[in-house]
Amino acid sequence: MFDDETKTHLEQLELIDELQKLGVSYHFEREIKNILVKIYHKNVREYEEKEDLHATTLKFRLLREHGFNVSEGIFDVFINQIEDGSFESDDMTSIISLYEASYVATKWDTKLLKVIRPYANQQLRKFVDSDDHGIHNIKVLEMAVQALEMPYHWRMKRLETRRYIDAYTKKHDVLIEFAKIDFNIVQAVHQEELKTVSSWWKETGLGNQLYFARDRIVENYFWTVGQIQEPQFGYVRRIMTKINALITTIDDIYDVYGTIDELQQFTAMVENWNVKSLDELPEYMKLCFLVLYNETNSIGCDILKDKNINVIRFLQKSWADLCKAYLIEAQWHTKKHKPNVEEYMRNAWISVSAPTSLVHFYCIFCDPISSQVLETLSQHQQHVVRCSATVLRLANDLGTSPDELKRGDVLKSVQCYMNETGASEEKACTYVQQMISDTWNEMNYEIISHDSSPLPRGFVEAAINLARMSQCMYQYGDGHGSPDKAKTVDRVLSLLVNPVPLD
Image (tube, rainbow, N blue to C red):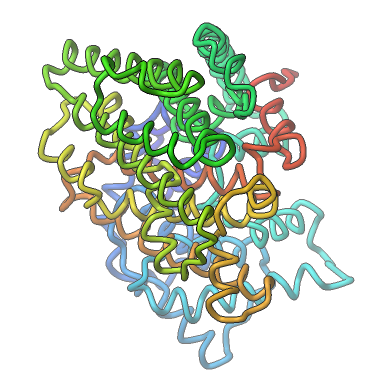
């Protein structure tokens, strides 16, 4: 497949793109890297006159996705034509490709952001709104609608794989048969992991004892599939599901049930990390703290045994920081304090739990792990973590504000902006959506600057996948808290329950 020397660069890029969308590129990582390195060093620095729009956009997007710092100057010929009004194309597939390529832009790619994205957006909307789609088939129309709803770069990859397989048109292609079998094999692996974590959750007793907390073990596992889907990372998914379940439970203690005095007690307990003081806690908090304490120490023990480094103090601090952020929000709610957006976000990017989650992810996924990197993560100094957390926070706010406000939660970014500026809810939502887009531009820079970063590429990708997963979970509402109302149930069924039919 990759050894065919007659393939052009475009054919190689199209194959890589297809492998990624079919979810089987992890089988060919070395081959894909070798091809992209060759293409990057051979011809990416100068625009080739013979290349059409599709070839240029595909090359740019794939190289950027894989961490190659390709200049936006590759589009200069097209940009000049767009700006002087001479650019014409009725190939909507290429326009979609151009639109998608604009979403791997960084904040420094001003031409992509100010010329190409608005132009492609305008052309796609004109096409979608047209009554006569002419020679364009329904598949291209669906692709355009989907791209406008959310760009591919922001989407959960495993869900896109299922969608792509289901829509695949080359019925007897050997690649699609391989992808279908692989999808079902990986799904079976995921199913066994879900059984394991479901048993663990039942054994903790938290679901029964804390009746007010959300019992969401399936959704908590679903998050991990979005973050890292490959079958060989089952241990990572199992541990991260436990972390997610504990985060959900503790979040509900602070949001729904605990008094301020009780929450201050629990926060101090997590900060002190002293199980001898367990009896000082209210009865309903004792089991929760003990499960948190035991699971954290168990993870730390495994890491010390396997990687010869003691990480418990870093894990413990991440939980203490999270609980302190939860406590601040509980105090705001009690005092009816209305923070502005800046004050809200200073606390909210921590309270959304991404820093806690990603410290654990780094420890269990990366090998070797560095105490210096752990210090930077613990002190909240890694920009990719902040970006991922910001997207998660804002996507959560857009999807959950109405439900969480009814439950007694603090005002969210939308309401903070409305109070601060007097804007309508619609304008506030638009503002928050722009904040998400701007944060993605910053996060994209982290992908292409990995050579100067101490963080492993796999960790950076997982942090970005967490942002993608948040936009999947909250795309149609509160997919975590009310999964039946926000398409989460359907998505779980398609990824974890229903296999792909084999011809």
